[in-house]
Length: 330
View 1 (cartoon, rainbow, N blue to C red):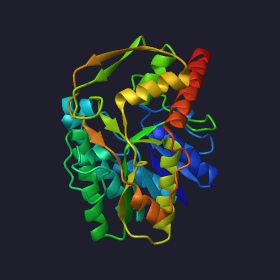
View 2: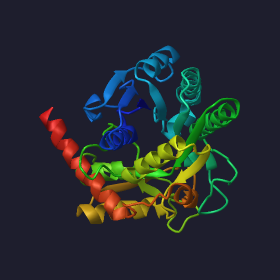
View 3: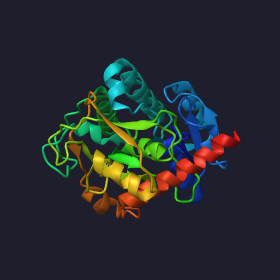
């Protein structure tokens, strides 16, 4: 029996693959390699280059590798880009998500873990936000993910199928063992961008909007270390394998930091300064989104190990330096 990981050559997916391999799982990775990297996949995993929206291909993989669980990371994740290209996001996230779910049902795969997003909340009225808060996504990205959650719920009601949808808050950092990290060129993740600026890979970085109704005028987010996030996926898989019911859970620490606070942390931890310019707000950005992780903790017994912005930033900086050395060798 094996676990199929879509998008397993990407940032979060590659960390998940390492986690599964470390646990002795048989892993199949399906990735187009459009934004992921073959070298990022643990060598013990089987890498198949292809699209998760290709039902025939997914069906063959399920049959050939006796897939009993799917962990679905593949998709597009940039909020402003989704505003400019909504149809592209509905295709890549929603339509292909539907195809993957259909292949899972046809192949009798009963366990499905979906990487959802805090963007389904928009700017919530309460902070921290719980899973029972109203869903008001403010971007096509958030709506594209919300639609997949809806399809999963309807599928679970109609078939022998259970799922966990994990709503990520802001994922950052890198594998403490140095095996994986955020490697995409042109990435928009704040800590990644600030780390690049600290190491001289960018001449400057931009803060998008300084007039939000927050203490310093910049957006506030809850940052979760990627290694803690993939542990939540392992916990979700264990829950499903034990016959647990479908559920939706937030993945965050319950503490928010503003954009300017993050930038100052990167400067302090790196010991470097860099130019920061102020720009206009970006379309689709929420003001403040902070998680309540109480459900994740109570249902799975999840306990974060890296609940420190300094530690998240330090691991991101270490990976950025390692990536720079790798790129110079290549």
